[in-house]
Image 1 (tube, rainbow, N blue to C red):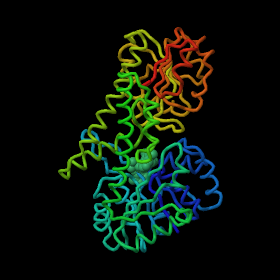
Image 2: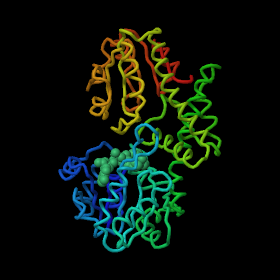
Image 3: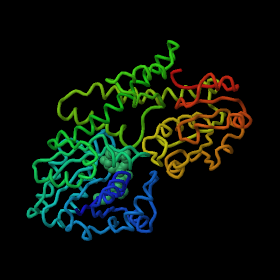
Image 4: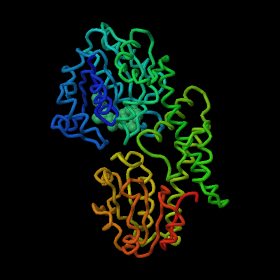
Length: 434
Ligand SMILES: NC(=O)c1ccc[n+]([C@@H]2O[C@H](COP(=O)([O-])OP(=O)(O)OC[C@H]3O[C@@H](n4cnc5c(N)ncnc54)[C@H](O)[C@@H]3O)[C@@H](O)[C@H]2O)c1
């Protein structure tokens, strides 16, 4: 099958490479010429484990290519996937669909023969129908169907998630489009991955409802961590005890500095907007967003308290800046909310991250000092803050750290270490809900 992927970002590039791995002939298109040139040069513009090798293999075997010219690929395609960004629109929390509609408008004139146009981007309910209308207006002669095929991959584990998902959701209007998508996904259906086919609106909503539910679990356990601190309970024991109940499940019940990343923050906000526009209530999700903001604010207080009640004039070393490990993605990372507030109040920051520092330099205040060597970042600081649980930070040389610090204050916002071990090593150790 011939596939065009519009957008070479975290989703487009991974999806394109994986479809090629399944045997399809895939062309990835992006309006960002630098990105396409980087890919044509054999380099990968993002950090995602395993992606470089997968892209290289499929390019070499002639199933994957990159272009910034639409006339190279659309007319030949059986399927055109829209995998462009849908960030939060400035001011109102709604998903910004301008990239989606622009992409669709751009491809319309080139459609030739029956083509299925598939929304892979996370888009509000009704978008697929708008896409259909837009194509019909731009190219009345086009023979096409629209479909919704939301993506559930997690950055850092994107290839495995794409190749072995819990399910594939396809929203379609008829069997013709469904059959084309089922054929494309046949290799993973053969390994017993269920394919759920629904109407367009349900598929669009499944994505938002799933992300909002996962964000709810995180905000729930973060709120429980506050209660644990108040009553002297251990949030790890609480989370473990809850997670053993098959009806609840243990995933997404780990407390932290608040959820971030390119999906949960924007998708929860967009779901609230969708509900408002349709006169429906979304009180749970609204509260989830509030609890998440409060959690980030609580982390600032936690750091301040650990520094003796005032961060002014103090220096902290921050380990990890990205919203989670194994990605270079800084979008809505908790560090972006927490660190500027500390800097505003006179705190100096030494920062270390394995993949996020280039992007952080653009997004964080210019006062932040960056270190390639983690142990240099710790030299003479008043406290360490473990912000993102990269594997490298899970086995730190505590003896060396203690020697480097001005005072042995360790603030663990990911609960990586055991409180009693850290205390026995002589640290003034702070964590979440324990
Ligand atoms: N990142 C994730 O983990 C993830 C997971 C599931 C779903 N999603 C959803 O997938 C979509 C894409 O997310 P992402 O993280 O890959 O975004 P991204 O910002 O990494 O990539 C989007 C790409 O689209 C390109 N683009 C913009 N307009 C274009 C156009 N008209 N034609 C072609 N390319 C265009 C941009 O240049 C960019 O390279 C979003 O809707 C997101 O919510 C993301």
